[in-house]
Length: 457
Ligand code: MN
Ligand code: MN
Image (cartoon, rainbow, N blue to C red; front, side, top):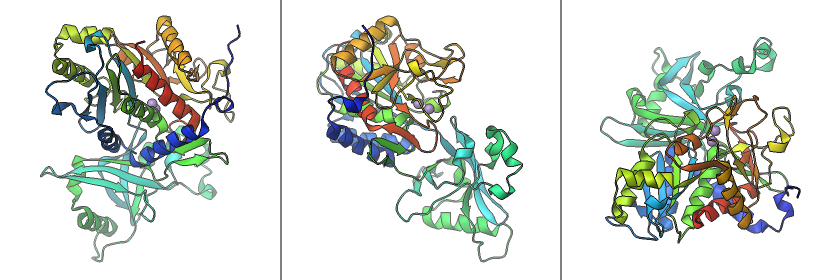
């Protein structure tokens, strides 16, 4: 009669398998700190499992494994099912962008004989968390001749690093009186990148020196920053947290902690009744807009390509039927109950570390605004699916009513007619430069997605 939950480590779970899965996840986190890096690593992993570009196929049949890249920042992978797509597909959707600092178009300047990059933060961050910690610079510079210069500086062994300085406590009397949102202002997030002046005695000699280093090492000039996407991310790599190694600390768990299990789930799906679709999108942290976000038509395009190549006909009617009959696990993180900060959580409905995948019937803020509220019928199907496959799971709301809130890609997928529910891994210190998740929850999320792809729910 009573509904009771169990800490996953106290069940008969195979700890070795759980820990082995998290080793692969940790490597992925270190290699894929940006959405572009995630896409290229996903392609590498997918090809090693027999996936091929969708464009390589003129016709598709059951069991074919394909991927399609969306402008280098998003990707869809699919395993063609027994049934036609217009009978519905099973989608797991996650995002591969993460909160960070982007360089401004004109970033480079000198002040007080030190050189800096100006930044503009991306996504919801506590700005004060980004000072006084080692930072790395990742991204691309596209030159006028079309050449791409790949940049990845600051993560490896004795590589250089960068930092945003903070005021010493001795002189911070005024700063410490400010609200946390103003302790570090957006325009103070300036990255320290150099200190040695060029030999010539001229104005901005430190900046001049940096420009000649950039020119020598990367062949770029100051104007090249105008056509670049350079992201500042924490240098720190993923590590086990705690004496018992049960947790993983890393930058960007949100949402790679769902994207990686979703990827692994589709890579290990061989036969499926319904076509399995892994949708990995960009721009979730800023509203899912643009041609690489979940609000774009990319999913529709790829479904139509599949319907065209399987011969069922890429008509608008078929597309709408496919979407109307499809299911989607909108895979994104939830907030893990934090005993250090109990106040904004409602314990009965909070995410719990080590209790498996979380399912959120709705997200949103201020009375479920911006949410896709999964139906009771869908919740029943998910319960059945997870219970039948020994998936440890529990429900999670983001926090107390009116404590805050947030959204995911769920509403944009649901707007297409797809039966959609939010689920994922609960995270400690979400959106901080170093977030924490449970190895058990990561593995359980993979198992959940794998069972979803394998079944006709
Ligand atoms: Mn997220
Ligand atoms: Mn987020």
